[in-house]
Length: 350
Image (cartoon, rainbow, N blue to C red; front, side, top):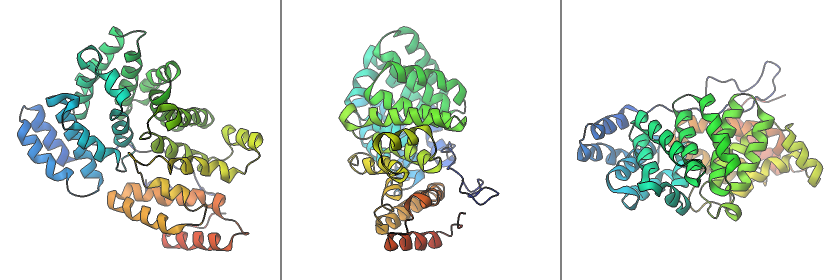
């Protein structure tokens, strides 16, 4: 994140870049290598202390690896849910949404079809056997053509291709799955597709896809609430950095609200979906609007503990929210925002 400038040459705030893909850490890879070599107990012994060492990015990564091990060894009825719950409640923008989806009854039902072949593929992915995971998902797509399981297989394949650095290849299965299903799976597919479109600088299209993903991931549509905060953050970040998008203009024209209201809405909606996933960027995105800066500082502290990358993203979110939050009619809010920007050592945009 620190490699990206905060302002353009004219002093205007730049939009947030897409979430980076994080490589597997050496500590977690040692545990996964032991597992792939058949040393299950050694892998658990290496990874469990790491996963339990606080609320950090490394602990979340180790917890997801342990989820993969337990899924591979005991299936979805084993201890993998405990580790998934830890990951879903963390700050990881990739593992968190996947964990939230995997915890749902809908995922359990579809992924368990055909003797749980998709669970086998997911276990392979989470434990670092990426070639086996990809071939498993591809075979499931071929076998389950025109069935609900095909859509989930395409989403899992798209996520895998995205994580392995091939977003162009990931786009087709994700787009196809999003248009063929609804609810939770459509929301997750759109969440991933939106990331790719932002990276391709197709931001109007990304805005429409993420708006749709938010509607589908909402508890009223999906029946579950764990995914929604992650989709809302991605959508809210996009709107805050690019408030001239068609989806913003359409909402302003249709509802007669301000641009700031449109930017705030995804973050505000996520405040009511926090039983499973509680990413602190929701607090960073929402609380400046009513001028409540205590929760913003608390969120920043949690993110700094998690990783410097997440903390830096929060700083940048505060900066892109500046023009939507600052209001000369509300002196306390404007003063609180200015103090926050000074504390975060953020530049003054033009």
